[in-house]
Image 1 (cartoon, helix red, strand yellow):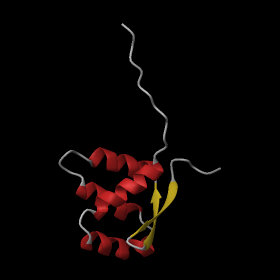
Image 2 (tube, rainbow, N blue to C red; image 1 turned 180 degrees about the vertical axis):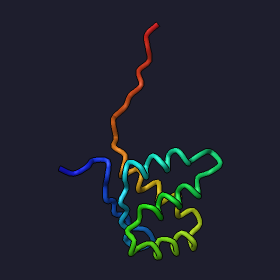
Image 3 (cartoon, rainbow, N blue to C red; image 1 turned 135 degrees about the vertical axis):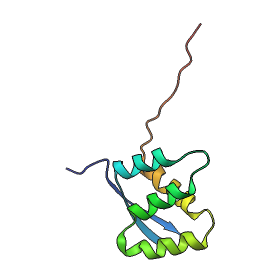
Length: 94
C-alpha cells in the first residue's frame, strides 16, 4: 500500500520537466518556515530538498535565472500535494 503523505509530483516549467518527491515532513517544514516577509528562501529550500537528484542542477539554474521561479514552482507543487477537502465555513444563525 502506498503512503498518501508521500507523493511524486511532476511539473513542467520553462519547457523543462521536474520531479519532486514531496513528503509530509518536507511539506510541514516549508509551511512552518514561510512568514509574511520570508517566502523566497523556504520555497527554494523546499524545492531543492525534494527535487530528483539528477535534476537539481537544472532546477537551481532555472531559479537563478528566473525571478520568482521558486515561489511559482513551490506553489504548483504544493497545490498538487495538498488535497481539496471541500471545506465550507457556515455562519451560525442568531
